[in-house]
Amino acid sequence: MITFPRGRQVVLGVGAGIAAYKACDLLRRLQDDSYEVTVVPTSSSLNFVGRATWEALSGKEVKSEVWEGTLSVSHVALADAADLVVIAPATADLISRIATGRADDLLTTTVLATSSPVLIVPSMHPGMYLNPATQANLETLIARGFYILEPDTGRLTGKDSGIGRFPETNRIINKVREISGRSARLVGRKVVVTTGGTMESIDPVRFIGNRSSGRQGLAIAYEALREGAEVTVVSGVTEEYELSGINRIDVKTAQEMQHVVSAELGGADALVMAAAVADARPEKIEAEKINKRELTKLALIKNPDILAEASKLKKSNQIFVGFAAETGTGIREKGLKKLHSKGVDLLYVTDVSDGKVFGETETTGVLLSKRGTEWGFQAADKHEVARQIVAELVHELGAANG
Ligand code: CTP
Image 1: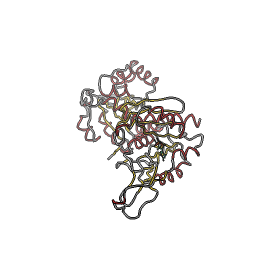
Image 2 (image 1 turned 60 degrees about the vertical axis):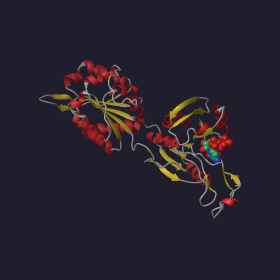
Image 3 (image 1 turned 90 degrees about the vertical axis):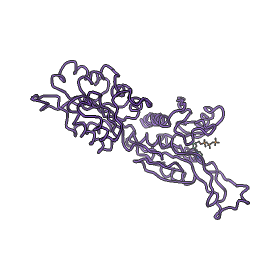
């Protein structure tokens, strides 16, 4: 079963302020808004709200240090997966550590490693907040593109009052929505992704198929969804999967796939042909099961080349992505030839010698663009390739429409 996170990913960093308890409500509200939240509290903040609370509320393991569970490199994984990092409450010390680029716990290393937007929600005593040191650190962070939500003014812990109160959860949620909307780069775009293998019947029990799992196409669909695109997945035979948010159309044969692709293409901004399409099908589908004694020869006819046919109708503002699975030597050169013969903007050519790639989570290959740029991947996670392809889609769609 191939599964994907249900919503956009938020890392919720929690600093050691009394308002940490209010971040429990924020976590819940983010979840209500369909964000999938991973909590990364600083070690000192666990004095206010303990690990058990965060684990119970988030349903996930909670770590504070880079040294915990070192089998996976947590900060890099978190930094890559996060669509947004929210730090609430952010203390003066945490803000200072981030501003100076310190990387002395899991939260600060994640912030340093991520390329996603970071929202900082300062919450502290007015004296600390208004101190020139804290203000200078906030200015530095604003200049670097961090988002800062100004604290509320009002009653604080003890007898004090003034600026520094943790904002009402609604204000934080509204800011998160605003940033999420702004950072999604394919909002209003329609992306059609074909995935999986096609299945061509020989008789009621036999068929011509292939070893495609659908993983690569699904990873691209997922990354396009994260960028806010409207995604249609034309799904051939794949491993079972669950990917919420897509418009899924199941097909079996190459002809069915072509029919759906041409119907969907009109309103689409991009077509990603990740499906492994059978190049030929039996000339005739036998209504009865063929007796094994007669099963000696199979007459085939060519299937349509869906991508090459679609390319003939391609509009100048549409971007097409093709795939090629090759074996032997000169994989890159074979890919370059196909990039041109199929009339696509981008083509990922994979090395499938010795049964590699099909059904696996890793891939080795080269992403080629018609502009002449190339990106090599060596035993890379298919999501890594998907992210690069979607980044190029964003880039190319911007150029084609702007
Ligand atoms: N493709 C397609 N229709 C087909 C065959 C392939 O749309 N009938 C698409 C695939 O989805 C992929 C690209 O074309 O994006 C390359 O497919 P591949 O099978 O590697 O190339 P072929 O054109 O079939 O060339 P060959 O098998 O001769 O290498």
